[in-house]
Length: 265
View 1 (tube, one colour):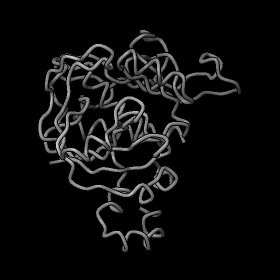
View 2 (view 1 turned 120 degrees about the horizontal axis):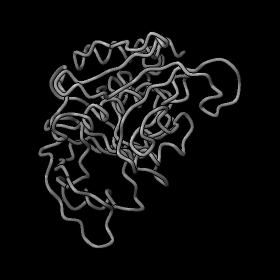
View 3 (view 1 turned 45 degrees about the vertical axis):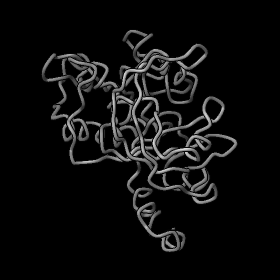
């Protein structure tokens, strides 16, 4: 599993960012560094490390990817399976991701994108884009904000900015428990809007303006159905899997009878 994920990461970095991995250590010839062409900063390190050095049970080595991320997000991720403090990196701003199948590949690539942004010459600089608009799944926690009520009142709302979402991108909002379903298809109209939070609000410094394009019933794309497309959880902004994107583009009746085809894609 680790070798396959490793190759997919290297291919993704090459295609998306034009990065060719660098192998800097004679004593560890398989360690691969991904760095910016402009400022030469690292945004990813692929390593194979003895499990015992990571505090893991079992023998042998495991492949990992080191990425830089926001300390608050990193702290949250380290509480979840598959994420560890950055191995041989600054523990407060780097994490190590196990490449053993514990963390799905879409989440891994999304975190690599985030690391690219965090280590860029300018934080607000957008990553190169392979095509036009991209699709994202973004979580909405009803404990903090009633997005359903907000969209009942208006079609355009402000939402917390994610570094990798650009104007024109499609944003699918996944509403967490007790709903636990994909409810809205939106489009980003404006990004990087400065935001002064009110007392008691979450720590948000930038927001984006999104417009509701479509609304789904709660039983159309519940979490159990999303799992069949490789979406086991939505803890932060993540890329849209191609199979789910295809299903969402189909008329409802056609999609419901097309499970066999979608499971192959």
